[in-house]
Length: 107
Image 1 (spheres, helix red, strand yellow):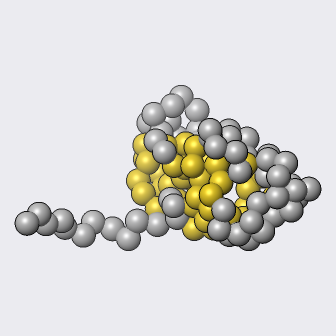
Image 2 (cartoon, one colour):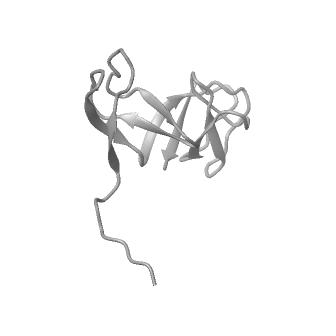
Image 3 (tube, helix red, strand yellow):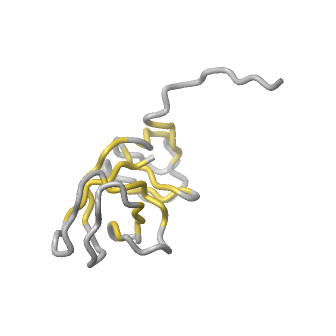
């Protein structure tokens, strides 16, 4: 039988900025197969917090209506219902086709 030791709650994780520019607070960071949101400014080479769960308001780049609970994707500019971007989570509320914002439960 395998065991694991509790490490942390996991709402946010330590993230090291491997780039050459500051990652500003609230910036969407694409990870492998998911996204996180920078909780603070993270300087190049520094470690900061990355939110990986919670409900966030995003720009809606897709043109279709999105229903609460629907899987959504980050396309580099915002949220869409079209597969092909990075999985972002699911819609936390309905968003009409004409809406420019959408609430997303990431994680």
